[in-house]
Length: 79
Image (spheres, rainbow, N blue to C red):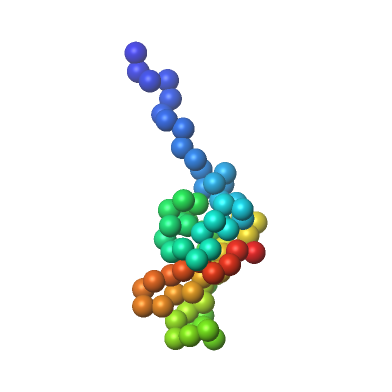
């Protein structure tokens, strides 16, 4: 008999919480996106911290702040 359903998968809505995102502070933003799913939108602007860009990754209920330089984007904070 065929399987009754496909294996359960975490949906971005259930995985993407502020608490889960906080675990990625100081880590590559790509790891956060792999774990939580893509943000609903993003915004980047020249950084006052250095030669790179400050990023905002917008999720439902929280925003992830990043710093991107030389192709490397790091999670800085989650609010």
